[in-house]
Amino acid sequence: AQSVTQLDSQVPVFEEAPVELRCNYSSSVSVYLFWYVQYPNQGLQLLLKYLSGSTLVKGINGFEAEFKKSETSFHLTKPSAHMSDAAEYFCAVSLGAISGGYQKVTFGTGTKLQVIP
Amino acid sequence: NAGVTQTPKFQVLKTGQSMTLQCAQDMNHNSMYWYRQDPGMGLRLIYYSASEGTTDKGEVPNGYNVSRLNKREFSLRLESAAPSQTSVYFCASGSWLSNEQFFGPGTRLTVL
Image 1 (cartoon, each protein chain N blue to C red):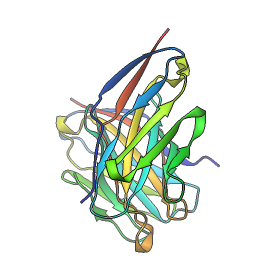
Image 2: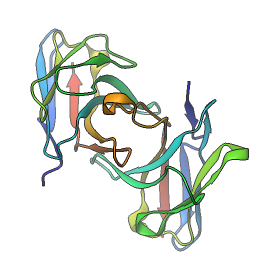
Image 3: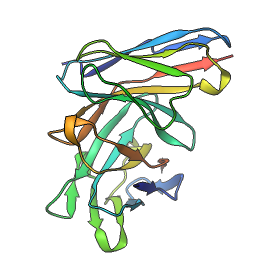
């Protein structure tokens, strides 16, 4: 079984300060990893994903994440926070789409990023 | 491309009432999903449909039923609403090619 842990429910950062949102996962097999962002009163949209290859993944809006298998982590970072980054961020893990296209995705509990002017 | 659309956006029900949440996607995806989102609990899978004509239970199916009407549409029905079903409901469709799920804007349901 796969699981995802986002230990920080809220992370406050000052505008232009660096951002790090933590994600750890548990799985006995290889996984795919995702970060989704949810702006207030909206659905989730994909920020970035790791499927294979380079362990440093770049996403939209200047975010990136590094897959560290030895640490079972996939932390999300950004060099400089903008006010528009204030949102809730969800880490997710999947074993990939199986026969028929069904993809079981397990989501973390989310981290709210607060950007302080 | 509208992506994934959901109706209604908001709904208030009394305990015991029934309703159907509608979802449609125009991306030709085989798989579709219904999740509920509650504070501090992330997203939990209610039901999914791997392909047209099939549906299966997810993590929290009790009190819900689903119908995969065709490849585009996947509806979620609450037969007898309970206050514990107050939540935000998201529909998603999945691309096995990109291993990504695409989400609708959500339905905010309150059961009094």
